[in-house]
Image (cartoon, rainbow, N blue to C red; front, top):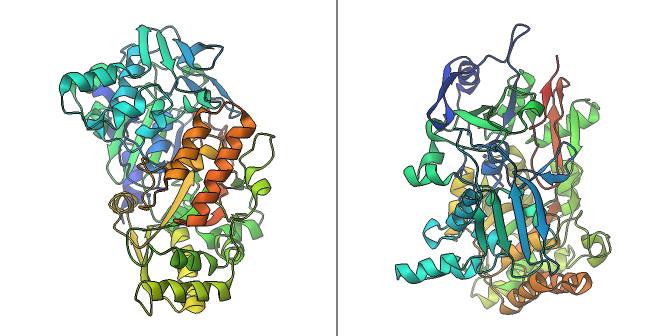
Length: 552
């Protein structure tokens, strides 16, 4: 989903580790060197691949934000070193018999990095801020499970008193400093998992009210997780250090993490080889092939609950024509792409829900539902000719938009050649920084755009409700009232079999309309130095290093 490079980056990264850093929350402290001597600080060097769009729980919108956020903040629940969901800021919770009311009790003595107590009011404030129409949060829809959340977020009300009434009607309330009550519109089987997702992280109410831009610089940044921000050289690196106010600090073995912000995967790989990175999880395809061939012990193919696809701008001719979209989807060879281009164990996919998501019986949703279309060159040629004729065209030229990354480039080049050879289409490739690509997609300023979606939780819904007509993540211009209705029904249905059938029916409508072209189900090939221990890769998140250690 989301990724900058400077010619002097290697030098700057080394210098950044020995210069005095700006302290998070207004404090300052020296940044220890990660090398040399028995008392050398343990600084893990990772790559976050791109300048973040917004390191604010309520404004973040993708993986270029989530990796630092996951190490800086903590929700009511969290993942333990084995990837299981366990108590986080909340020490315990209760669910009502009907599954509609959750009551969370916060741990004693939990604090923000600046020493302020973390309160239930901070959670209520954060969630309502995300939902506020003024915030224009891209991820506010993740909170729509809460009573009144959608009505408040989508309100066009201009009367301040009426808007405040809508805010007050949102079903999240701090009963006291340590008790948070959440009322849901329907039971949500994965609700505790959502509590560990960044949109549900708290925000320090006092800090934000004093400085709405607190999250844009290290000197004013305040967080509640295992680490606190001490340095942010924009488009260069972010450094975080162990948060001494964190309740579980005794289990945190690292002194800090340095997140490089390097988009170019070849540069990042060179940095890994030079020892400037300890972990790298965006590898060039040719590097993946060599690492596999050499049986490199530092190479791992981790899980990734994610789907790689191309969006079609259905508001722009001729992509508004179903036959044209179908032709494009049918005219590429996905097996060739995963076996000869990406080479990381990915699987071709012919639906928007990837492999690895269970259905109501614990079986793989994708395997049981099957494929919605097949590759068919002759059929694609026929559909393209018919579609272009209907649009008054006799030929097609298009541009594929993708974010700067060697892997995305190689996939785009493969698709470009397949469309040229199989359909006679003239294809131009355009790469941009990740945030620029997101902004272009939001504005529907593209023909075809490379995209990927990592599941926010382990359920088919996370790959389906983003295509609802009200979702800010749709970004295709496609809408369908019947699809919206099925998604709405699935969200209020408590019977697992009925709920899953609603989602199957919704995916069928979506894939028959083909506003996107699924390509493959992800894996996550990565490398980690042998002296790095304790990292783990959840299926639906990037590498987590909270409990990592450096043992040399």
